Image 1: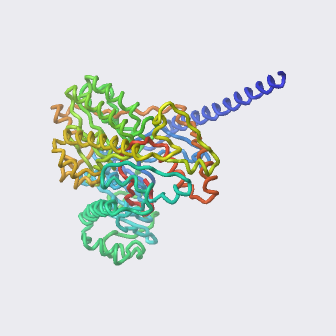
Image 2: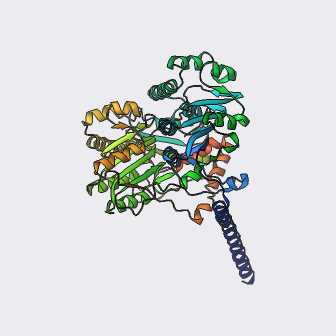
Image 3: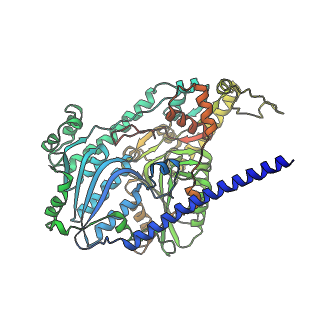
Length: 604
């Protein structure tokens, strides 16, 4: 008894000590952040004087909107706790620079940027608006990638390092297929779906892409590339649409000498970065020593756009970004958190309308339904809803969009994917590999249906198929009512097929090609708000201490997979399978589509 007492006391002491240490670490991190923030605020001498140049670093990841800081073990080890840039803040800053009399130009420093085509196109468009005001955009890069060059091509002048390269290669993507991996693991994915083009399930049941899946990607990539090369040709005087394809396919421009890029009209001049201050000063007619470069953060601090939470004539911008999940954290759409926000806005008399900013490939059907119902409730109050589509607004993302009063999309948005599928794993083979023998007892034959440790029989498969078809019929009906189309037409353009927004507009899935700000102006006009309206962004971002505590994840599950594969596996692929197994069985989600804009393979 005495030994147990001391052991219990010791374990309690150790537990309390560990908790105290962890709390101390968190407190220290928070204090460091607060002190750093105060230090920047008080000691920064950066100001926006007349003739200032806004410097934008077009590199790294660009997210849709700001998210709370999430520090994990990797970021602590690598000492990297920086936040990615966001489309929301960059667009806000560039629009502010356009009307700010002290900003005379934008200096775009380009690198390897990780963003989908629609995000890059939105940046390119707003930079074009900045140029139209009579101010200059100047671009420079050591090396341009597909994405960074597409944005930079809108500039007045494009400069590049003499030893650099212009990696213009066209659009492409790679999808990984996991059937062989799943066979090794002893996992069988049982699929029920509706839609010839609903190919999101293919990687788990096939080893190669189906003909319909390949056909829709050929069309999608072709339309996106056509738009991009047309945009480049429209801004580069010596370049034509046909010459771009020739340079990419025949001349391998991405490995050609930098001098070829100048001769072909893709780049204006080759200079080293150290000389760019002098180049910019010459273009602006200023003394190089008197150039004043300002950061986006400095300019952002001078605008309160999106913060009008107490304004009377308020338009709410509600962000629905990421996969739609039942629960979930940062980077996902958690209906349990989003629905109450929409309901509260519906009942707020100061809120006159909404722009739903959708950047989602879809996800859980149940969550999609809850969000859609909340949006219906908002509209029932006589308030208009416009949707602004980002990179993706497909499957479940389209489910929550289709009944809005007006749908705006970037020309390079990927949308549609009207279809539903179900994935039910049978892990009996995995259990056998790791020495687990499942034993079940139930009062009814279907009490444990669907079971993870045995395959479905024909009757169960038929029941699941009927369940999925019922969900698909509901999806078709909602689109039909929202878009005012005959159900037969919706079925013809459905089948799980994804569309670029240009084609989606032709077939009636989208109303207008435009930006978030175009959608805001439409809502303001719809409600006759004139010029006296303000914008507030929702859900509001609230950082907490919990955001700084890393998650440990399913370590035991990874260990089980490693044992089943006897060390012969790719860790990234296994992590992808684990993510798949964590999903809800019934899904309305588009297939994983990788549109390569940074000359690297990315699996979305």
